[in-house]
Structures are given as structure tokens and as C-alpha cells.
Image (tube, rainbow over all chains, first blue to last red; front, side, top):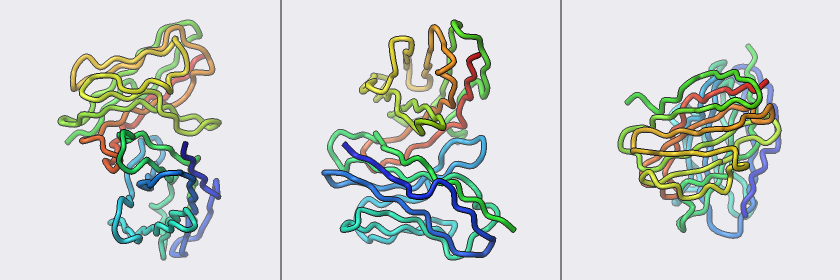
Length: 116
Length: 115
């Protein structure tokens, strides 16, 4: 069984400040890791993913996350946030290979609120 | 690409009534997932299909819930009879290939309120 823990349920931050949303996971097998973002009244959208290779992955809107196998973490960071980044962010994990077929395990979510 | 389309966006019904939620996946996607989101339990996978065939329904809470996928472009999630504890946002998602690394594309959800 797998589990995902997002350590902060809410993160308030001022515009242009840096932010880190923390995610730890537990799994007995190799995993793929994802961050999804959910804007109000919308479904989740993929922000970035780690499958293999470089442990640092980036999104097109300035977010990045680093896979740390020894610490079983996949924290999400952005050096300077915008008002438009206000949303709920979900970390998710799935078995690498096997028959998991997209059967993601999601964390409880972190609400990022960016204040002017 | 219109994305995953769900209907209705909002549904308010009385306890005991039948509720049917609908989903049209992205054309060409061969996996379809139904999730439920609540404050208490977060996002839960209810059931998923591959090529219209149900693969894993272990997340369906009880026999009152059923899901069908009669063809590649349409799926339904039915609750009969509905109960107040079924109130939640129900999401449909689809993906191509289904391997663990295939990203899910979510619809905007159906917000169900059972009074």
C-alpha cells in the first residue's frame, strides 16, 4: 500500500515571495510522482511529474519539484509566486510499472493563497 | 480538444432518489476513472475502465453505486437510492495508455447535494 502526506493544509504567502509545498510518500516499490493543481470549481490539472531520470522536474509556469528517494519526498517550489497561483495543490503517487494503470494515491491537498 | 466533459455541473436531489452522473472522455483515451472528492476523505478512486471494461471497482462504497461505460465516448455513475452522505464532488478523468506515468485529464466535476 502507498500513502502520501502533504504536511501543510494551508500555505499563505505574499505575491513575489518564494513558496514550498511539502510532500512525503510511503511505498514499498518504485513509484512515479505527480503534482496536480485544482483551481476553484475546476477539475485537477497535471502540473508536473517525475517518472525517471533527472530528479528535478519543472513545469511551464515556473514551478519545480525535486524527487528525493532517501527522504521519500517530492516537494514543490516556486521562487516567486503570483496571485494567479492561488489554488489547491495535490501530490500523488502511483506504482511504477506493474498493473497500477493510473491508480493514483492522492495527498489531502495544500491550499496555496497568494496575497497582494 | 474539448477535454473531459461532465454533466450536470450541479445536482441537488432528495434522499432516496436516483442520481445519474455523466461523462464524456477525451477522444482516443482508453482509460476512464471516476473519483469522489470530499473534505473529510479527500480524493477517492471509485472505479476505472479500460477499453470500456470495468477493471477495478474496489473503491465503490456500496451496492447503491454502479457505473457503466457502454462505449468509448460515454460513461455513467449511478447512485440508487441516494443518501445525504453521498454529497460530494464527483470527477471523471481519462488517460491514454494507462501506464503508471500517463497523466489523468479531469473534467470539471459534478457537485452533488443530497438533502
